Length: 431
Image (tube, rainbow, N blue to C red; front, top):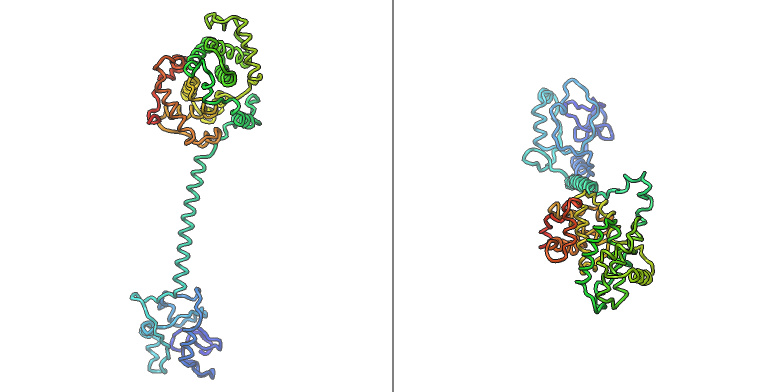
């Protein structure tokens, strides 16, 4: 029995380095003396406890006694034995009961350890802290995983769309350098802008006269069935000329408008209207020589610089970014043409007018503001930057059918333009 892990009373204890039982009575046959109780208590209490040695559950009866069966050496566990646990061992071990009268009693070291009400031992403080930290780490990892998943979903929902991917095989779309073209337009659009108060330098004309001229030219453009680009370039040439050439007589203002349309047609149209047609449309108020002389004056004043971005070039790009349908497109052009008539809208750049018109059209048709991240990326404008201009556009839409300048309203109140002018304005933008 000296080399066995099971003593003669059936109580199993961990082996000490000398081969005896720790906490039990040494075998007299091995010539070893029993260790002092104070030394054992000191070793047990003062020994460092590792997490692997923590055993909260009491030993079961199967592990405590092995009747007629030799178990492999147990793993040393630094666990003190309480009085309650020692009593259970002695009471449940039949081998111990039989040999109580035949052998000397077993010395069991009892250490007073406070027990919980359920009989379980209190965990060491560092174990509690470790478990608390592990629980906190698991909780934080779960929160981070949820946050990362939410962020990924938002990024997927708000991802910027490649609006040119479908045109890569179309050589006319010039996908390889379309972004460079519009970067150039954006950087040079300030050259096409005029001071919003240039009419102060014109003693004989005012902004109302300008509005009447532009409204009339929109009707002329529609009757001649000219390209849309021609209209925007015509208005741009008029404003740039009036901003530079001061003291334009009131009776020459219509001549400036007719000549500007002639220059725009020569730049944009394939089939240019003849001068006589323009004279006829102006009720023969001017001669052919006057038109040609004004053409020379305007071309020299503007230094033949006709290749400047207008709201139209941005409209096409921004409508593509907005993935707009025909209704949004027609309403957007209706709104931006209303702005061509109004002198106060000269304070906004062509790109801002185009973006605001599309934003206003989307809000009008859908009843709420809708400005996707794709629109923001390709236009360069956030919803906040468009709000002021959009509110003014909604006001122009609300008053489009009233007053004397109704050329744009009547133009878009036809089946060709889908009766876009009949749509109700975005009331929430007017607040």
